[in-house]
Length: 195
Ligand code: GAR
Image 1 (tube, helix red, strand yellow):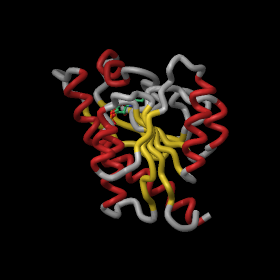
Image 2: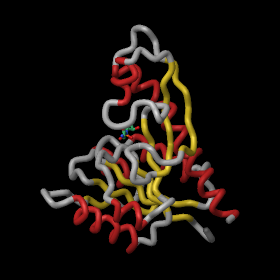
Image 3: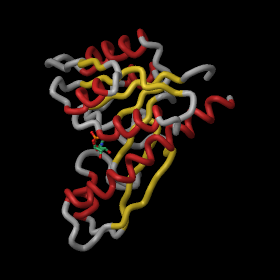
Image 4: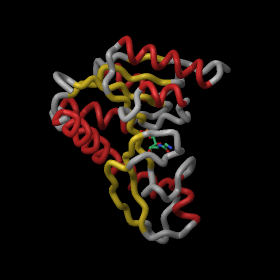
């Protein structure tokens, strides 16, 4: 990858990982990169306003009862129009179509609040509590056709306390997510740079 890598971030809600990543890029902790656009499938995603405040272009691509493939095609077009090199899913709560994965093969990253392959899918923190594990954590991985099953880039372990609730555990994991995502993006871009 020559020049600035253009990152597109997909969100559905709060967008705290998106903000942490955007701030890390701005602070130079992800060299040779810029966050070019933030796209949400939810018009009321809180993260949109926070991205705008930082001067980042935002876009809402609503699902509006359309089929996944059609919705994804609109997002693919928006990403291509902006010459996006790397797509980061940050609390984007939709499974991507195979067409999307193919269009950006090897260039889509996701962050998940567990030590994959444990606890894929929804409610990862709740799953960790139900299984009474003593450690859980977070994972950044490449997105492929498997649900939360693509190649792992980076992980952080987080201890679980006996008195943890979903909220307290989620907050402890989230702190680590905020550091891990930018480290993983820097790693990926650095490797591509050397190719
Ligand atoms: C994060 O904990 C992220 O790992 C998780 O949703 C939260 C989004 O928070 N993602 C998933 O569970 C994906 N399966 P954020 O909007 O504040 O970044």
